[in-house]
Length: 304
Ligand code: TA6
Image 1 (cartoon, helix red, strand yellow):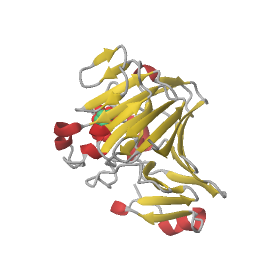
Image 2 (tube, rainbow, N blue to C red; image 1 turned 90 degrees about the horizontal axis):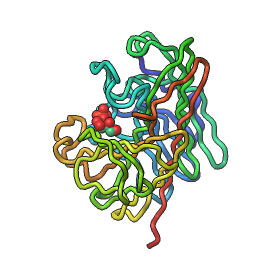
Image 3 (cartoon, rainbow, N blue to C red; image 1 turned 45 degrees about the vertical axis):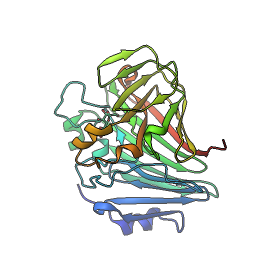
């Protein structure tokens, strides 16, 4: 997998003060977006947002200090794109967890900005290496829009002659002061699957608190939830479209020790609240059809 030429990227898509490309960690190409309301960074490797900092706020996304930045390996943090399957492959466990989109080099498609907004679009289509893992023709685009919020839109187009079935996630790693003093609001009463026990649960009772390893897929969720961070005195509003699952994950102590691309002491500073279509929200796309799943993140300082 060859690395795109940074100078060429800046010549074609760069705009002074708004969109610039550089070689990031591991030499992987990164697009830096800036605007009147903040800044963000997007890795072309994996089509992965790596950073988001709204004006006047602490960074919103967590990236592990031990994250790999190597082709062929996933980057631990930001917003990984899990596609075309979420979690383990439904049938072949030797295939990469969370699909292959986060292990591919994406291409720049468009870059534009206005007084308020900075907007780029990346693309990934099928290749010999993707067809070896998933024998289908597709077009995948990731649009990242930086304005008063950060919006991320993942569009799947089925370019095949047969229907395709996908599950997917924008696997957002939120940065929090202390996960033990952070709660997720907006999932009260929602059914969920506990991946640690393999059990389905009838309903979440109240806010989600994290006091141990947590790995849950919430079903048929509302279009918005709030991550209330008492330590940073803010709420992160996670809004979404065409996503029927919300995944909440924290590895806590023991799992953190088993992950070599994650610091054993880092679990208090992160909480994944993922925008997904997983398990019973797996979807089938007819030939020629497309589907867009969208996420937006907004940081609100708490007044009380
Ligand atoms: O989204 C939660 C989850 O599926 C967990 O089960 C955990 O494994 C996490 O994703 C991270 O997966 P990864 O393949 O990036 O190590």
